[in-house]
Image (cartoon, rainbow, N blue to C red; front, top):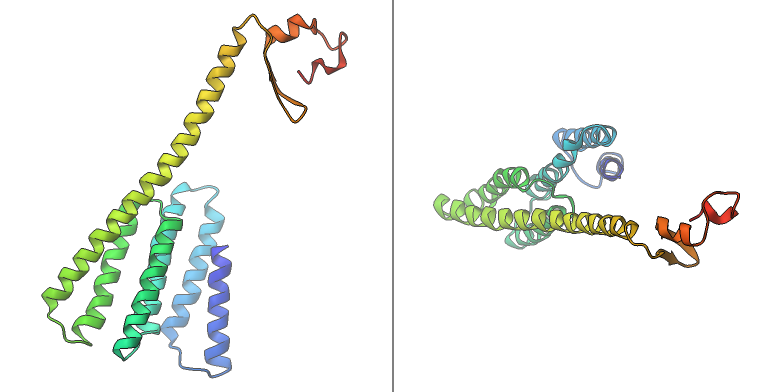
Length: 216
């Protein structure tokens, strides 16, 4: 799915800028688009066999996003830079909330990206002191790292809670097997579970006794 989206972006950019002449596009941008598409296509083929491939999704998308709003769509006025930064950071956090798997890896990629962007805008364009820009970058990295950590913990806790519920359900089924009373779990006229005591009480020992014994 992600590879297909990157492919659409790459093709759209080539058509708009190269074929229709709506603007200028560098060879580097074209290479970034197609290399990113190939990388995600390879990840799509590998994800069924190599689990760690999923760890690279959020960092790759983060770098791709930063490249666009730092170099491709970089405005030359204060208003353009401000709007691009708002949109870019919002998109980066959406990527974080959706695809984050390893907060350390994701934060490690975000750190140089935000430093380069603030260096490009703050130091070189607005001529801000380097120390002030780096201090703001450090603050942004801490906030991002905290969000990445909390997102990963909450995601893992949700899966852990689901797994714990499944284990509790299976534990109760084992307990039901020890009851001398017949117990069955039925939903929408469908028997989900029946313990062995119920079969004995209904004298359903073999398929010849009752054709519905197999269902039980």
